[in-house]
Image 1 (cartoon, rainbow, N blue to C red):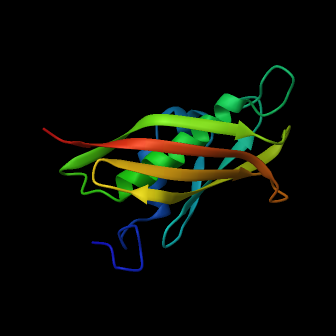
Image 2 (image 1 turned 135 degrees about the vertical axis):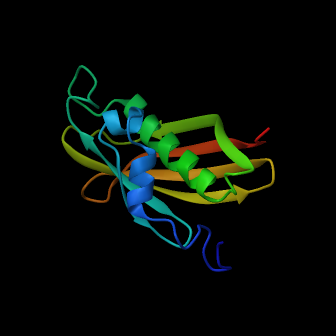
Length: 145
């Protein structure tokens, strides 16, 4: 179970998070989890042919996939998944800087952790730590039947 200072269970690993994304859209786009903190998770995504739009820039939809992947995974990691699961309810994104190559890094942190909803902030930066996209994801917490 989680300790008072950590949002996520102590046994949560990078390997487990990356296995969760196997054979999903996130693995197709090359999303890789890289860090788990007390109240955040970080993942990186390549900016290449898989994530480009026709002008050779990072596709806004790819940024949204990274944001929703981070927020949804983080929300599910806060739950007893034998009893509940989290699904996306609403997402928004503001794209503030273009990227044409390299990697982008997303960091998700909680804004609100409630019984029936969570709200997650996701900040995506480039390799120079410059803001590329800011996103907010609301997830619904559902009971398993």
